[in-house]
Structures are given as C-alpha cells and as structure tokens.
Image (cartoon, rainbow, N blue to C red):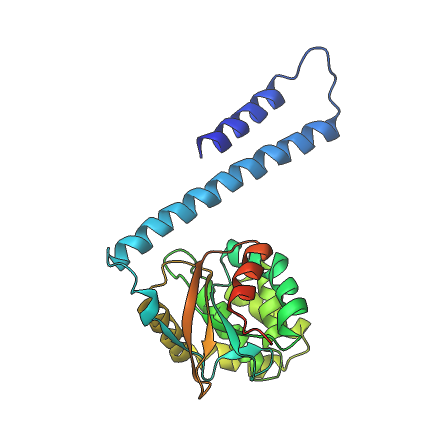
Length: 257
C-alpha cells in the first residue's frame, strides 16, 4: 500500500518537476499524468477491497472452517460443464465483481476445459457466492447470469461479465443481454423481479456451511453415486496457477489400469 502511494507521489513529482536536461512534449506529460492517476486508482481499489474484507471477516466472526473430511457440497440444480459421468468434480464458488475470479476465468479455466472438462475427465460446477459487503454489484450480476440461462446463454453471460467487470452496474446489464442476442424485456423482468435471488441466497448459505471465507474457493472431490453432491477431497481457497490445479487433479483422478 505504501509502495503504491510512493510510486504515485514519485510520478507526480516527476510530472511537476521534469529533469532540466529533458524536454517533455504535451503528449508525454499527458501520458505521465494518466499513469499517475492509474496508480492512484489502483491504490484506492486495493484500500477499498481490504476495508471491505475487514468488514466481511468481522461479520463472519472467528469460527474456523469445518474439517475437510466433513465437507459435502451439493451440486444438484447447479450449472455445470462437462460430462455428468465424470468421476471427479470441481466446484467453484464465484463472485462476478471479484478481480481474482476474473483472473482465474481468463488464465486457468480455458486450460482446465481443454485438458480435463472437454475430455470427459472432470465436471466443472459453478455456484454463486457474491461478497455483498465488498462487491455490491455482484449479487445482481449473479442474477443476470442465471436469467440469461433461461434463454440458453448462461455460460456466455458468465464469460461476458467476468470479462467486463467495469460494467456490472444494474443499468448496464441489459446492454450485455442485448449483446448476446437475448430477449431483453424478458431478461429485465427476470432480473428486476429477483427470480433467482432465493437460489443465490441458498448458494451463499451452502458456502458458509462449507467454511468459505472468500472467492474464488474451489472444492475438488468425487461425485456421490446419486450425482447430487460431492465429497470434497481438497479445498483450494483462492485462484492458483493452472499447474497447481493440474497437480491436484492428477492425484485425485481415478487411474486406469
């Protein structure tokens, strides 16, 4: 935090007092000014995230998460990618306003899809966990994704919102629906009417029961015989590199003799 502030201050000082041996064009001055503002905006964002996280943790109390061996996560009715018969399941609890969730979506999920999901080895299940004290736009964004699902565009809206986190305000959501070719009046009726609010609240409650403290959180485990739940064998709190996911998956995947 102090480093970001120092960098911004140094850039501002350089802008105000350029080295006498170097001439600066108006374009260079303008570009440097933008860099200063970017640094300051980044610092403000991080400070806001940390403050929100403090509030969230205080609201949750100091209770430790339940032991891993007791974690069973339901998947019935949740949106999923991959074969239902896949023995191993990954469950992600996500927040559409969470920058780390967006990074996982961009950098890790495509590799998981290519190697494990599309090949039938792993099923990927998504559940909602909007952190409302930190991310006030996340809940409605989650509703928007589910409402898009009513028109067959769940994953398309999921991808679009995680790729455009600066445009999650409720009045921007119809723009995304229009961009995906949805029936916008029906979409708006679904979102404005809170059709999926209760479902999302149930996801949040399930996440709290499983001991989630932040997003994204992942559970890796074997699907129960009835397919309605997953017994977690590993919990991954936070987005790790693809190589880490790969190592965990390869250990858990049933071996073929």
